[in-house]
Length: 311
View (tube, rainbow, N blue to C red):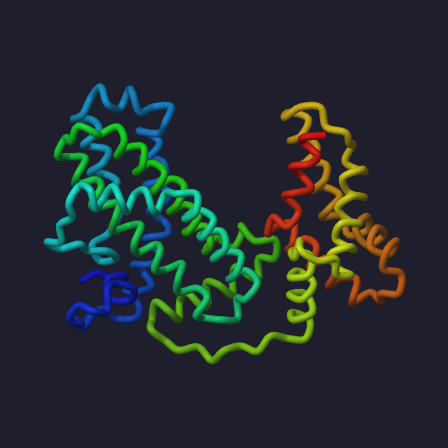
């Protein structure tokens, strides 16, 4: 039984004792994160741009698939003698690679980024990794049987490994967060989950609660809370400074670079906030800057960005 089978698998089956010590558990998890780099790179062999070439040499394709499977350690996930019918695998692939599943993953990641004091919020991400890896193994086994729809299966497998699994594993990359200390806290919680330790729920500080409240208000597009209006003001001013209007896609990417340059300039951002929020002291100003940057990171301004593209 693999570590993830034990931790996140079907609890309805007969429970088996997992004889893996704490040190080995951490090694298995660390190896899984490291091995994803290889999985991601190998999956490019049958990306949409390369799939026709991949289908011309099925023996070479089998070798690539074997290499991917070897990077999914049986100490992490072991399907044993479990078998799935083709229609079951296809159904699972459609579900886990759907736009709904992608959005669900983004929601899980955004939630843990905000509520990284709550151990329970991270477990659904681990469960989704478990389901994704198991499905990848079943899909690889099916493709090697040479079904008629091998191209369709490869397309789904690429989405599953390169996109879905990439998003999930990126949760544990501290550099993917604006505030890298958030990534450190998430990895601290992950370690406790892997070791089956119950963390005492950390009470949010007053500062964190204040920031979370602002982020929630900015992200609530159905109301006009004060901080929602402040967020709009900050966004509009930064957008103007970055050089509107936008002419084409290339100009848009240049605009994003300029926008983010001003976004992470404390002097620029604080002066814009003071235009709208004149009575804030230095501490409150810092917290508002953190909240706005988090809101931007959580895509709370996507509707405004899309409107700029269409203008």
